[in-house]
Amino acid sequence: MKNRVIGIIPARYASTRLLAKPLALIAGKTLIERVWRQVIKSRQLSDVYIATDDKRIADKALGFGAKVVMTSSKCKTGTDRISQAANKIGGAKLFVNIQGDEPLIDPKTIDKVAFELACDKEADIVTAAYPVLEHEIVSPNTVKVVIDKKGFALYFSRSVIPFNRDGVKINYLKHQGIYGYKKSFLDSFTTLSQSSYEKAESLEQLRALENGYKIKVVLVKSDSIGVDTPEDILKVEGMLNGKL
Image 1 (tube, rainbow, N blue to C red):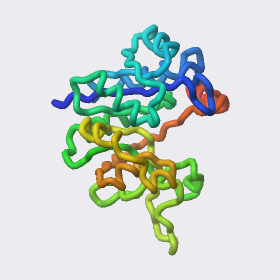
Image 2: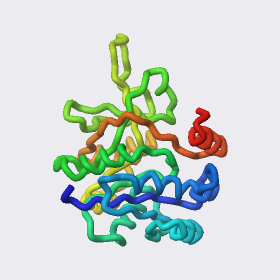
Image 3: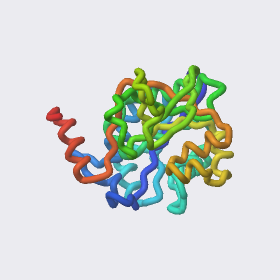
């Protein structure tokens, strides 16, 4: 792949649901290290950085061999943090934001997003989605996406979309929170005000859609588990031990 693609893992200390989440231990290793070790398996990323606002996280990351870029604790959104990190890193036009709380993310998912970002000239953003059954997506915590025939997002919602009035066969898609960005998009997006749909759904990607940006959705085979609670840690440990 000719275009240089940089992976960035954002890591905040002040998580609302699990304080110091990136430093939480999962089977003897910190959460952030487990994420990083999955990300560096990617074959499509030219380099990987952890972006953090906290020296404790930075010191731990440097200790296990990661590259670190410091960002402000005043970043309002994850995209703001990625944009700030991208400006500090420099030397690239393509960046992939990998969630810092998904220790089991499939490197093939990262590869697919990075490859599409480098190859699709129409896409301002590339993200991923995973097929799920209707009964699995009724929760507002599960974000759904509908796409057009070219694979571009039409809308994201916490509601079940599309509404299946007549019970026809629908391939429902669960959004997976990994994003590939063009640097030009990042520079523009961070200057935009929050949009109405974004505020209603609490979904930052809707700001991009409302402002006319194109989001390409790649379909992947595996889902990823986010860690937000102590119970999630136990679940991940169980999977690592082959018990689940």
